[in-house]
Length: 451
Ligand code: PMP
Image (tube, rainbow, N blue to C red; front, top):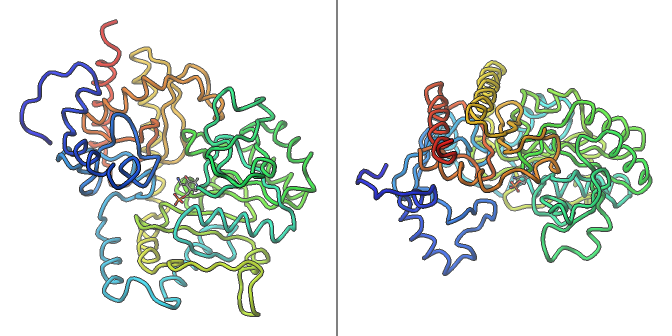
């Protein structure tokens, strides 16, 4: 933490600027070579993001030496915090043997076995370098298997940067169309021209609306793709009846159900699919399973996954990739999941449930309307008085207050995702979690002012 006395600052942004001079200087230099000064658009926030130097357990330290309690875990990648000794020693051992090879290796087989045994719906699996590649290959597999082209995704759902899923991620109220018949809206310029015509956007947690849409396009749809907990929209869990309906209707109509568990896998030992007891045809994994290294995976039914088998000549769906199943990611992932026993996971989830309850209570003390959403160790704060069951419900939340709270927490030594989202890691103890509450109380007192 910076030790010299700071001038008095009136706003959270002024306080933030006073604490982050080195980050500002970094961005001044970095903008010369990198558009926006970085390579990851979701990390940007105003006035400029903090630049990280190192992580230690549940702490992350920025360039100015600010020590921040990390409630992000690199946006849910690090469930055991930074540098857990079990993960570190597995990685160090593997680094000495080799960081990549022109051939498969034992760690890949070990990790494949572990995941197939842990996730009920995964009979066969393949590894990629990112979650984006996992969803790309799952979608392609669904198209190849069914011979159909159209895919359905949920409004507010995020699945990486492939054209087909860069649709209706954060549409504005004006763009979004009817609530139960959302309009497909491009999330980026430069998408393939017919992308919008080939994607159906489903309303989330609307059983009848989504069922009708799927049924009306039954013969065209290759896949329905859904996150069991909408991450980017603010940790909004699916309702069990919604996922059950998706399973039922896709089974009836021979449509491939893909669950994107890149974020939600941490919800239960066998993923959110085990929690909801809804088994998809294909599952996408990423983030946490890499133990802090770039990794993704997709897997599921043997008959679909067989299309990737090259044993008899060119496979139906080729899947090359220089760093697929990279052994560093494999051993880091194995070590991470070894630590995540059913008991450890249950303790983490109980702690997070209390944490979410306390959060809601704290806002209540200040009479600030909030909806705290989440599942397992995931949480989000939506600053609205209305229940949040879908992306649509977040559109009227107070984005300005959310930003003040985000900067305020940073100023008090606590890091969450700028979208008001976060998660608990096993590295955070009761004392650190209590500090979050103290920091939030201080911030709410400041941003709320005398009342
Ligand atoms: N699916 C979900 C649900 C995600 O949250 C993300 C990343 N935020 C992805 C896919 C894409 O993963 P990656 O960033 O590793 O490409």
